[in-house]
Length: 284
Image (tube, rainbow, N blue to C red; front, side, top):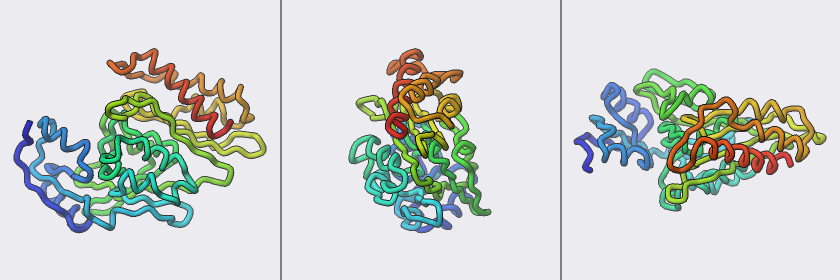
């Protein structure tokens, strides 16, 4: 199908983008990589009066250390993240996850900011950012605010992003020494979206697990941290038996998706399998 008519604006700066969003008073969409938005426009699921293109705002494309955090500009592409030496050094699940997204064409153009703003339950970044204890920086014409990732992702394709706001930055605390991270995914072969994705972060000191973070995407109608798995391993010895016992708690008490890719019981099984793989990689 052909999209409905809209105005196109290529913003040259963050301030210009925010001004354009404010001018259109909730009837504009932000365009970056466009992999999620353009299909929705063609199907006329979205019919905004205007598109505000932020893809060429250089001030939104960076990966750098800022004190004890790593700051990632919202217009950073998946390829930027996949090839970041800084992220590979401190939080290897970020380049790992980025390298699993789509194909080279998607990774070259798609952005982390666009992905999290869209909040597809099968997308990779939401679960990874939950496990990373990330903060999402939002900016509007009236100012900035920061939200923990767990407060940003609210549900099925739903976030805390308000009208006129733009995701400008993702901030991730640099993990303590002895911390490992990984992202494990069972993907749909054509789209590479996650049928089940599991991100895990664990610090192991003197053989004991702490700061356990386990998050899923693709399992339910929104990404989530799995408190049952985390509690089962927190403070426990990093043994194969403890890892298996913790992984067996995965996706319990959660509303599980069931579709033509995977029925509910199969998805639950996959969640437990991939939780075990992820935990074994970081704590085994």
